[in-house]
Image 1 (cartoon, helix red, strand yellow):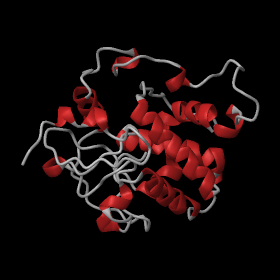
Image 2 (image 1 turned 90 degrees about the horizontal axis):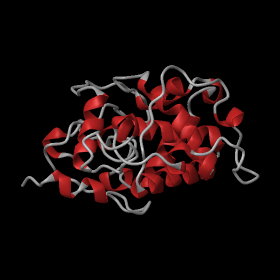
Image 3 (image 1 turned 180 degrees about the vertical axis):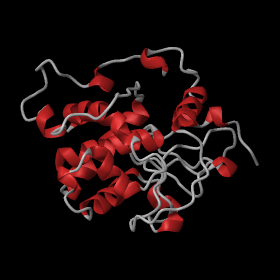
Image 4 (image 1 turned 45 degrees about the vertical axis):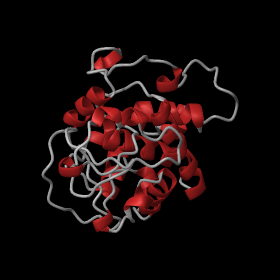
Length: 237
């Protein structure tokens, strides 16, 4: 049975523990590919990541026309963080979050409550996993690229293999069961566990650290989200 996907996507992950279970057709496949903790590449039959952005915009009713940067919604402190010194004491500095500067042009999208809850779950898992604020930036940026911080379930015939969740991890590649990888805490913890196995990840450019874990068809795409990810972690870390 096929469902009208416009009914599903806006309601995904309204809290950080809700799991999406989409079985839909009509949404473009996301542009990243997490093949497994062993980082073994798999065949890729997916379209460019821009298709995923357009699909999520369409599903949420914005069609990329209502907000800054053409992605709908309203830009606010929820998406930009704060750089004017008004953050409470104890929040990480930009130098801690982006120690090597951003690489290339940066992208930015507005975030709804579901996306923010998922970002907070990633930050919490980063702290629990011991990768700190820098690890959290890598995790949030990776999820922004893979799923736009939506906890996506299986997309039916349009799914990228069996990729699901915030990081588009694949059960067939050893990331866990579908129920596990669509649990934000489990998915983020699995990502950070794999990240810690990357030699010298703390000293790598974000896109290289993320790509070593994810083995995406678009290895440089993660870099575009570093600035927004740092803003999010600075505000909620």
